[in-house]
Length: 148
Image (cartoon, rainbow, N blue to C red; front, side, top):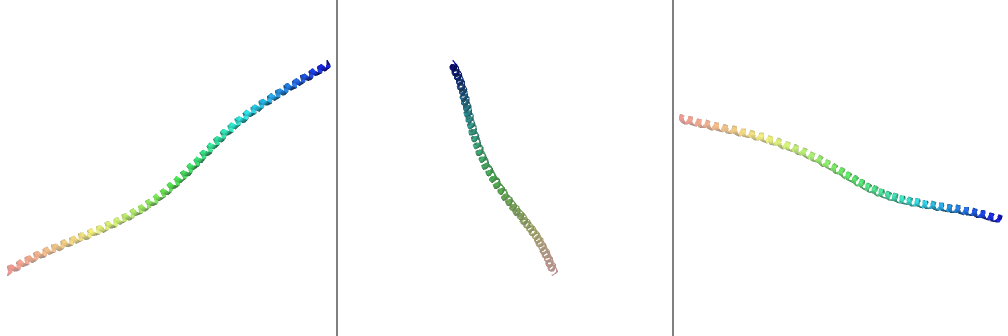
């Protein structure tokens, strides 16, 4: 009986050990499945994060291109405005020269008008003198004719 008792207790211990081992293996399996789920979720998260970073990189690339084009546009616009300023400066100078030319032309026309006015007065005076001389000669001729 001692032998049987020992054997029974050994079997009981062995059963307990196996039960504990089964529990351990079960818990280990659960832990591994949980770890696998965690790693799967982490992989999905990292995939999504990689996609987001890729999209952000594309966005930043496009933004950089846009800013480059905008800078070029502003540079070209600045050059255009500088050229327009030069053009307007030259146009202003041209208009100033045209104004002074027209002023000179007006002065010349004024002088010419004065000259013509004086010439008309001279011709008028000369005509008047000739008329008076003609009258004088006519009167003298009459006087001489009447005398003789």
